[in-house]
Image (tube, rainbow, N blue to C red):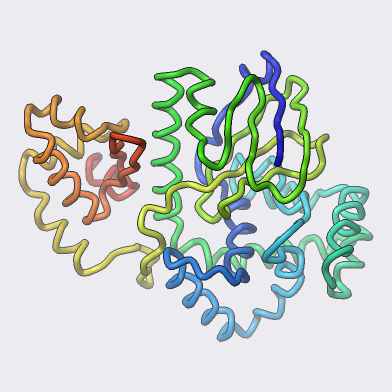
Length: 332
């Protein structure tokens, strides 16, 4: 079990990442791709990406990246720099500037349980061209495995953020941290991460905690090994139906979704879409539009099937939020 200890100052500085973190999603997707756990929500994605890697003549360039991201156990802290909270390019810039001491320490830990390719030795020496090669490999992999699905990943993370925001508004920081159950348990100033692979105590020491909602995170939340680094805890979001399919433009759609879009011409459904702009439960939609809860649920289902809404259940209520496509339609 991982126990994260909060002071009063840590409570004030705890926050949720502003959006899906592109570097964390990339690295954790590497774990998911290599895992023996065949999650049906990512099965199509795994088949498509694996096929693309087989047919990509440059896939050998990814060997070091895959070696640094084994399907289980430790992976280097330097692969997911804190700067990635500001975007993919910021994360890559930080990666390219990783101090040699950090490279050597992380790779030494990784090598205790994994066989690394010869290029890892050059990486441990801090050779600039190897660091740049690693960053280029991440760009290459991202174009195949992440970019075509980014809208769906963002939607799932945005839905989780709306859920956490409501928990924060209703119950303060205690409500936010309590909402992380069942994977985590908040009790008397300590956040306990259950099923963590090692017994560990992390004292935040006034730095606060950055909570990073992630599509590709496994069931067990992930924390950095080095306690001196800015504290981060990555946890899995509701995958909202998974990564079903993607066309050549990267838009995740289906024939059923296109048919549902044709049903959006009614005023009531447009009003439901508008009501969901900042997140709204089924009951709140019904009260706001003066319709029955059953009717509100039916309209939300049509919008969700069309890819305009995502829905997240929390106990006895369902929270609806806009997808990027839904927001674009609302703003059009």
